[in-house]
Length: 175
View: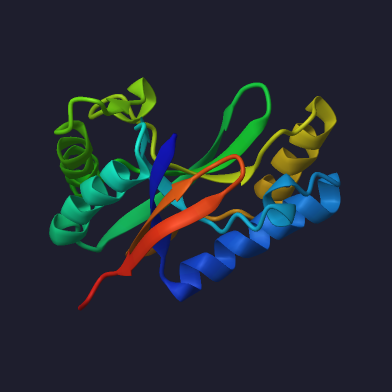
């Protein structure tokens, strides 16, 4: 499996990192911090047999992807164990998801996850993962007190392989 992820401007990254770290500290669930998972927004998840093909597909994304502004409006969950900050799926995010889908699905051997296909995607930034019921309750309490909606800028993109996490490629948007 490969992931194409978007990363945020410094201000947004600091705010989201603080929330992520506080959840880890107060719940005792250090999955995100122990694995050095920075705040990010996954744009695509796909299966591909070859690292070389995955990298070549990402080259197409590099040529076409642009930075943009998003609004992180709320908090949500993927039951039973993930809590996240949710981004509004504005035109920029819809177009970005479509662009990435087009680039990676052009190769016949690529299988794009049904959860990241156009019009089937929930843009989210994971703040806690593998949470128990009690840890989820504590994470909600933290976010109820600390989370506030925020504007954010996407300034870079990466290609990675999870479990264990390995970065393959990365690029920053030139302004």
